Structure formats: structure tokens, C-alpha cells
Amino acid sequence: MILPAALLCNYGRGFCLIDVGTEGFSEKIDFAVELLPKSVRLGGQNPIIQLHALTSEALHGLSDEESVDVFDRCQLAFEHVIKRLKQDQDEDKSYREELKRLNEKNARKAAESTPTVE
Image (tube, rainbow, N blue to C red; front, side, top):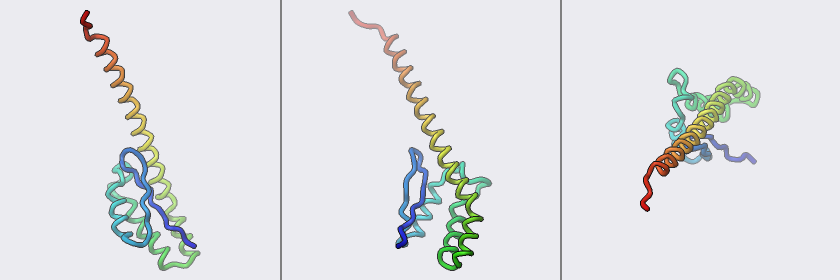
């Protein structure tokens, strides 16, 4: 039995999985293409489009041996996308945590400087 695949996408606050079953797959790829952060699009190219085309060709029209060759050629691109998405997610998390600390510090300062009525 072949299980449905899933596509990993970063949408700001974390990753989401998009079911890439056969129904409406083209729309799902279009959605993933739009979600892919610019930081992953080296040279303005969106790797999702090319990876989809290559893996689709391998899945639907090539022998197992040819499909393995396609995967080997795509591996670097897949790894790049996943690493950059993880890096973006980690940086976003650090940024949100630092903003929270700054806001808490500012709130404490404001509370300390507010005169109390006695």
C-alpha cells in the first residue's frame, strides 16, 4: 500500500503539512509555491516547481532505477529547502522570544515609573 505523501511548508509561525493525495494536487502545489519564503528562493527561483516536475515525472513515467537517479539529483535541493525552512523557523522563534523579553522589560519599567496614589 502506498501512503499519501505530505509536503512541508513554513507559514510564518511554524510548519504545516499539506496532504498531497491525488485530488486537487495541482492546487496544493500552487499553494506550497506561494507559501515558500523568499529566503529559500535562491536567485528568485522557486525550487518547489522544479522539484514537483522532476518527482512527478519519476513517479509517473520512469523506471525504479531512473526514479532513484532523479531523487539523487534532487536530494541537494530538497535538503536545502528543508534546512532553510528550519533555519527560518528557528530565527523567527528567537525573534519572537526576544520581542517578548523586551516588551516585558518595558512593561516593568513603565510600572516602576508610574507614580502611585497614596
